[in-house]
Image (tube, rainbow, N blue to C red; front, side):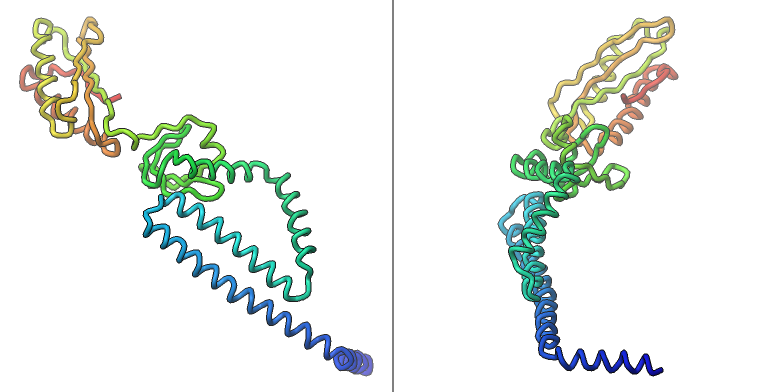
Length: 277
């Protein structure tokens, strides 16, 4: 008990002797806390305002998101440095520390810095925009956002995939949204013993069925070719153009059913197989 009392008395004495210094430091810590609180709150407001201004001026969403993120992180660093400076840390020492940390991070995160640089190139050259359907490597989907280090895709099954920006610039990019015309094909096999003498009639049925379909681009070229004649079947390929990439599977599926029905109205059970490659 006596030891505890002695320690407590020592603490009280130390506080009394250093009360001016403690009050001084408390003031600075309170100031640092206020700078941090109001500074980060201000960063949030400024970032939101900047984003709204870019949106009003019809700036591309990719550019808007990328630049506002950089703006936000830069201001956040400034607020943190200001808060540290207010408690007595020298700004030069802070920046020297940040420089050292930056060097270490730069060596350890070379790929991350590469992704950052790639992100800048993506928004500078406008390789694609939010809402575009693109294929990169084995990933196909709609661009939802370009962030500082990665690009977000939403695939046709609703999965969100994150692809590093650096990888995007090293892969071949297929942008399906850059064109309004997409060629598709349907292949089918017709029983040879049933239509051997009626190839031209079959081709006309195929051509008429595809040409009048309202999902096919009007006045576009429809090609019907005979691919192969086997012992059992005559195989055809139908080439046609559509302008709806997103729903192409549904369009082709509907067209397959219509083709099969029209062909079998002419000759029952003549279609051996039919599919969309």
